[in-house]
Length: 426
Image 1 (cartoon, helix red, strand yellow):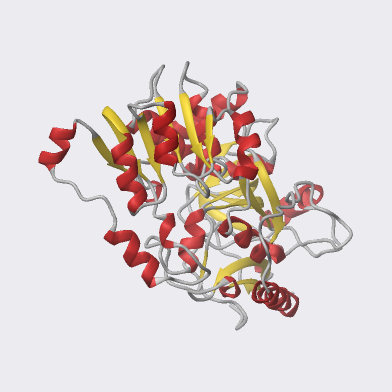
Image 2 (cartoon, rainbow, N blue to C red):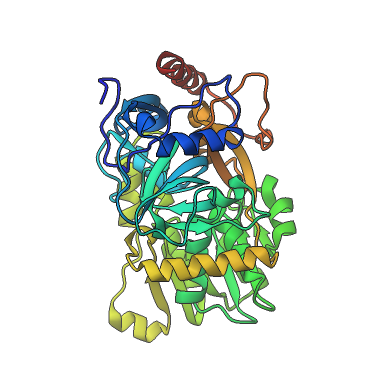
C-alpha cells in the first residue's frame, strides 16, 4: 500500500482508476471485466479515487484521494461493484463532525448507499452475475470508485431506473417505509406530520403516504419549496421559518395528527408529542437540531438534549400515545432490510414511488454537495458521482439556484481549499 493512501476499515476495491480522458465506465466494462479475471492483471497494483474523512471538523476534512494497493481476492459470497453514483445523507454531515457513532474513526471512507455494475463475483454467488446493475446498501465505505461487498447487500435495479435513482433509494425509502408501515402502522384516513419535507426522507414519506388512501400529509419546509412539495403530495406545506407549525396544524386539525415523524430532536420532539391525537404515534429518527454549523456545536447539542422529551411509563399510559425510536444503522436483521428493499423496488416498478434527484456532484465537488444539504437548499436527494469531472461537461442534474442563501467569504475560501486538495492529489 502506498504512502499516499489513508488506511480505512472499508472493503477494498479492485479496479484501476478511470482517467479523465478515458471513455465512461459503461463503455469500458468489457475490458475491465477481463482484467479482473486475468492473472497478469491481478498482479498489477490498482489505483482508485475515494472520498476520505481525514478528521472531524469542516468541509476541508473530506478529501478526494487516489489510493494504490494490491488487488485483493474476493472471498466467498462477495462481489466487486464499479460504483456509478453514491447517496449523500444527513448521517454523513453528522459523521463529519464526529456525531455519528456507527462511523469508524478517521481516516475512513463514508457513504452508506451506492449503485453500480458488478464486475466480479466470488465463490458461491449464484444470484448475481458480472454485468448486473445493482443497488448497494452498507454502513459505510461507499464513497469510492469500486467496492467489495457481500452479495446479500446488493439489490437488482429495474431496467428503467437510473444509477442516480438507485443511489437515492435505499437509506431514505427504507427509513420512510419502516417508520410508516412497521412502526406507525399508517392506515387509510390517518394524518402524518413530516419535518424537512423537501429532503430525501421527507419526499419518500410523502410518496409512500400516497400509496394509502386518504392520508393527509403536513410538511414543514421553507416557503420557496412549498410549490414543489405540494405538487409531490404534501397536503399542507408549512413554513417553519416564519410560522409556528404547531399553531398552523391546530388551525387545520384542532385535534392534532395521528403520526409525527421527527428528525429534529430537542424541543421539536416535545411539540410533536403534544400534537398527537389519542392513540397517536411519535417516531424519533434524528437530531438535526444538533447540527448548526460546519463543526461540532457543543451549545447546540446541550440545548437539544436538555429540551429532549422525557417521559415515564405512567405518563404514556395516561396520555394514550406511543413513542418510537428509529435508527436504520442499528437494524441488524438483513432479512427485514432485504424484504423492505424488494417491496420498494416493486413499488418503483409500479410507478408509485420515484426518487427525486436534487443535484449531482462529482467527487471533486463534495464540498458543494455537503454545503447544499447542510444549508437546507436541496429539494430531494443530493448525489455524488465517482467519475472524474470533465470541465466541458455539465452534469445532467445540476442543482437549481437558490436565491435566499448567501455565500460568505469563508465558505468561498473553503471551496477553493477543497479544490486545491483535489488538484494536488489527482
